[in-house]
Image 1: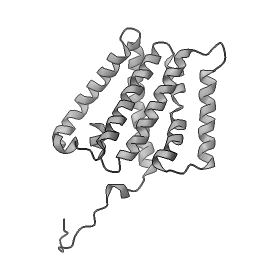
Image 2 (image 1 turned 180 degrees about the vertical axis):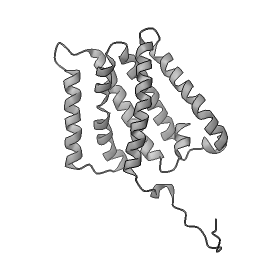
Image 3 (image 1 turned 45 degrees about the horizontal axis):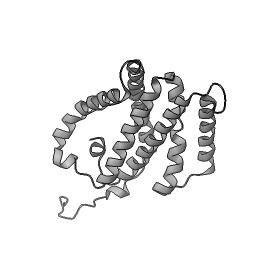
Length: 197
């Protein structure tokens, strides 16, 4: 491509994108509101509907929401990925996380299941070092450790209050964290719409 002077435009490769932490935090907060509504609905349904059906309905609704964007963007372009293997791994992580978390809602109060799933930042922090090559300083490790203590207080391993079902949201947090780290890897080459689709 050329500008009006006939000179080539400087194109920034996807891997050279700048981080925008405030924008990222804002988007995470908005997505958390939607996920909370979805989790409350899943808790309501979990007593009478199998977890895999609830997850299937969740992703069917999501497909209906995103389908117009895929059609508008051109399916052959939107569905083309630079890292298809990582996208498949990411998808499996998200589906596994949904099924495990929804399964836990049958046995645990939603507050306890959600609090237990807050172990995800610990897993994300740990996985970001070998998989993304990120450096984690002492302050972030300290904050992550405090979060882990909170999860341990909720789960109460080794006490009579411990429920084996508490392991389900922990494993869900691990699979979700894996998907998040892979999302970071794929975002260098794939658009957000490609990743969502």
